[in-house]
Structures are given as structure tokens and as C-alpha cells.
Length: 147
Image (cartoon, rainbow, N blue to C red):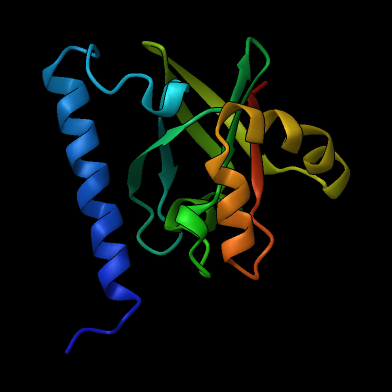
């Protein structure tokens, strides 16, 4: 029998793959704004493998100087793999609204998270429910252009 943590992880991987496929096959027309936020294709470097790993996320806050993503994993008690990867290697690539950018990711400080959280929840109320569902502090990640 599969470990209980493996089932949700497999579900996340399947949903991620399906989202990438639909977005690609539709030329970016379908699923480009899930929950009203732009889709983000985040590429990290695997902390163990050293290989590129790409995942689909959404960005509740983004502008020319930053792309903010939330490591919610639907309120799961474990951090998402992509967050663990960027914690080891913060150099990432972010594709949003048709543009790919080399960026450096960092976890928002508690003060930054407190300032950003109301706008994050305004963009998608589900984030508040995810935080209530888990005992871990859900990280907010700020991606900024690399120098």
C-alpha cells in the first residue's frame, strides 16, 4: 500500500503535468489565468538531482520588479518540492504572461509576508483556507530579477 504522503504528491504531479500540457497545446489560451491570477511556470534546480524541475503555479502579485508565489501546496503539511529546491538553489527561471526571466527567489521575511498577505488573499481567498488547514507557516516567495 502506498504511503499516504505519496498519493497527494502524485496528484500534484499529475495536475501540474496536465496544466502544462493544456497551456502548451492551446498556445497559452487555456488555463493562462487560473483563479484569476496569471499562470507561472517556475523552473528550479533539483536539490538532489541538479536537474531542472518545472512546476506550474499562480502569482497573486507581480509587476516589473517581482513575481510573488505562495508555497501553499493546497494546505498540505509538507513544503512543496519546488520550494525545497529553491531553498537550496535560489536561481530560478520564471515564465509569466509569455515572458521568461532569470530571477532569484527568496522567502519573504515575516514583516514582508504580513504586508503582502492581505493582497494575496484578496487575489485568491483559498490561500487563507490553506493556511488554516496546516500547522506550518506557508512561505511567500518573492522572485526578483538577477543582477
